[in-house]
Image (cartoon, rainbow, N blue to C red; front, side):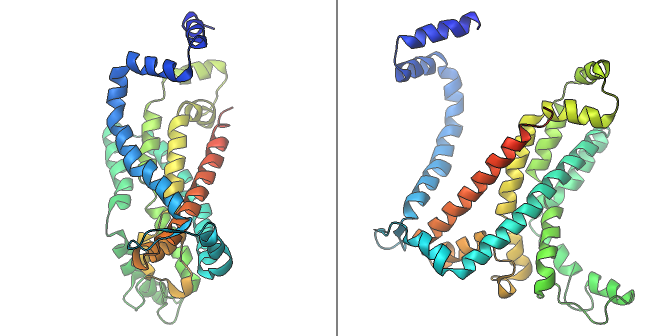
Length: 314
């Protein structure tokens, strides 16, 4: 134990935890002032809404009358009386399990590939891959490509090659909707998590590779596993959290492609269910219960992935 650590233990032993915290805040007041704007905004627009949503999930509330406490009725209704909600859970989990890890691995691969390029080329290729995730009308490309008439690119080419005899209703047929949506999600997945991984590759100290060569690292794959990934572990965790959050919250483009609701609820997710009851029916207590379950699912997946990533390179 260092001298500073020993002194800290001795000082803390003679006072309460609250008093010690106040002394530390006074000592580092400049740092706390710098953090304060973000903390205040985070507390007002994230912590308080989450707590209010949790409380409202035990009530019936229509925005006009005072909330009426109903205890667990909303949750009982969700799991025992709401068949559409069970469909939404299944579709959300399928979507998250497929697109979450896949988009994360794709982002990691392309970030590693782009990092090997020259700086000017790297900037251009990064923009090229990142552009689909920031395009507000990305669904238009897929709507045109998979148009239901013979003028759609997919139908035209498949009919020309003799694969199909008549146009396929791509976004009206339950058989094709979910696979197409997953492809669209993967195509737009190179977003903030992708940029986080590129930044992570940039912070790796190049001298570590020289030390690794001395210690027996023989190829680029060993460098990646034993040096690069352990060094950028914080970026890996942040990117994983962003990828999981995006996979659970991917709903707007689904609505644009297949409508609201989708045919026979084949692509109905928890985000759609939340929008239905919160934004259209104004059953805010019931919508809060849906949001709480979605929040718990996201937190559970984030904890699981974070636990797995701690083992990278160990």
